[in-house]
Image (cartoon, rainbow, N blue to C red; front, top):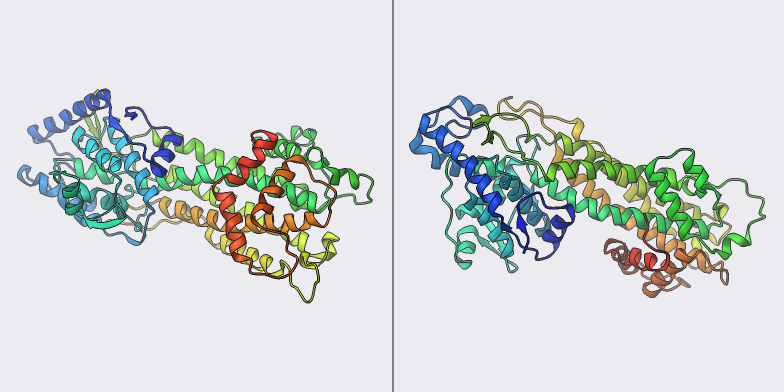
Length: 506
């Protein structure tokens, strides 16, 4: 069981969210937290005016709270702020939220008792997941509504999913043999002031999007072979002369995937001069999406190791500083960039599908049907891809350019970072379907080139696809087959098979 001391790695966050990785609070973190807590206690004893400790919140920052009401203030904060709506976040997102909030508090600059973090970690270890609605955060003064829902079970309120059953918070605690916490000064505020809802969605998205991006290279390589496109645009000289990191990685992947291609050799002397951009510019387009993922990764590495609270309690100086670390803009911008990047991976994949299905462009049977007219082949799969790509264009509108004031204009600029993260996730889900359609189309097109064999990586992908989806010799119900291909992408199974054949892709 790892100790929570320094920030967890992104891989540890994913492992905790999707598995049963449990944590304990390290002795060093406990000591740091106690030192920070001592600063809060001294401020209380001195009668100092401290935001969120001896005052109300937001517009009520000038309202002084008497010491006798400090505990009630923290409880009221959680109850009043838990007004999220919409479908609950998946359990994996909530688990990531819990770990990330615990990690931020454990840095020792929030003024909460170690007991608060230990209780969060206890719920996480027990598989007790607060029910957290996914809508309601403006991503500025922290993810207030989602984090309030996450924190409610600590005080015996809210709802908890435990062993597949949704229970009232107090009942869930009783089943686990835990007493509700009575929050002390600053602790309720520290639980809700943070970016952990958007961070949780984005850490999981980054992990999944990396798999998607590498699988998009596999799909593109299959389409290149299916359309007898040139391999020359992927020459190392091309990206060496315009060395964007993402483009160089994608071009290297394509060279490995296409190595030992009999199909390429069969049209070495053809009269075609250039291919369509969706084939020729794969390194440049896919590569730009890779660079956007790298932008998000850099932001998340900082965020996961940060303190996003307000006010900050600094034991080294004894100060309590009100500032803006809770603002989600550092994540909102890269989240929007990744939304656009994933939409583009789907966009160019749909164009390659059109290239394969259109006989005027492919030189193959119309819609890859064996007996066109009687059978429609893959005609409507392109309709579906076009619909999803169009929907992605709406979802890719950047949420971070919007701002709507809250708390009587005290919080006058907000990030909409959680909306950006949620939109990026929806685009990812759509992109999975579009890539599944490209894989199905490319496998069908490759059948018309037999007995010529494609490149080594494409051969491996083709064999795995055909283990799930047979050649389309007559019209049949295709939705379940596309769903199986989608799962091959999402799970990383297709990528693992290909990498077993050609080595790890960049």
